[in-house]
Image 1: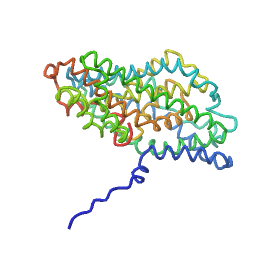
Image 2: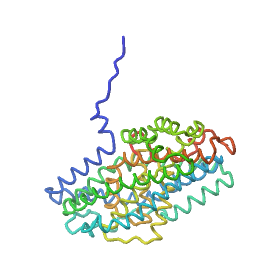
Image 3: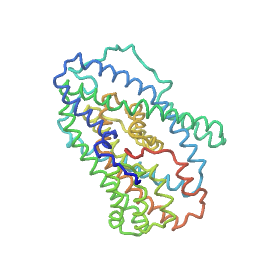
Image 4: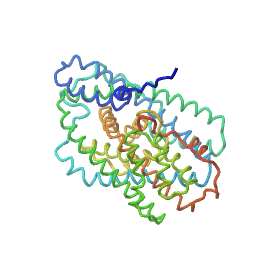
Length: 424
């Protein structure tokens, strides 16, 4: 007897994605908020109050649990070209963040003119939680303390080769990942629903949605500019036509649009990098590694959306906060967990801890991020091809000198990225 293979209908596959539930939450919140009485909205406002405080509690733990072992593992792996690749990818992410900041500061006053929503945190007609201000979930320590602690512990364990202590933090990371996958990510759609329900009730929905559409288009344009810049630099170093090299990665770009996953696109990205003239040895090393550590597209999305929300509320971020935010966000993206919504969940640490985002602001960030997830992922994987060209030109086609780990070890040693079969 021959076994019949049953293909899961596309609509069933769609219902298993975070994108589906976030979009559904936005639509239902916008519609129901128009006519539901306030007493029916109170339970959702109360849930958001509790969930928001819980997020504030776990943020420092997420930072410590993800960044500490990431620093140790990266240093322990060694390898000259591993460090070169990581540094190149990190610089690319920094360039994406700072470039987005500069262009946003120049264009948002025109792009978002007249679309300020100064009462986004507590609008006049919004429904309040039944809990009073005395209900708190104070974190064990602050976000900045967590960041400093992660670096001190990670670097200290690396210097002293504290393997037993490292094993403890690896297990702590597993606990953090369980909290993210079982407690935070599944509840994000309900959190977004409550935010947009209240926003619709208070009459702010139209203003926010119009601004969101503009910012999404702006972020997409920025991803295109970033790819042109990445391949311009790669072309100059490798002495190859940058536009031809960029076009050579087109298969990877469009595959990532469909899969929304850098990991799932690795075979196509590898083929494209080799077609661009990257030595197979270099491509086999760089592409899988960059699929976990190079998230320039995600940097653009988060930075652009964060600045847009600040502008709409009338907040002028100071330079010191933005510089710290971008540097730390790039590190967070390297260490972000590979689960649906993992990147934006990990990013809440710097959004709320450094930029002072509130729960409604973070909820809108989730909606914006998920809405354009595929374009960010496509930017990430296409940019990996540029990183491969850069490393290939620096290594002159061989990793023999200073090579301390093979491809598999490099990927295993790299921190888990914000990437899986659904979301980047």
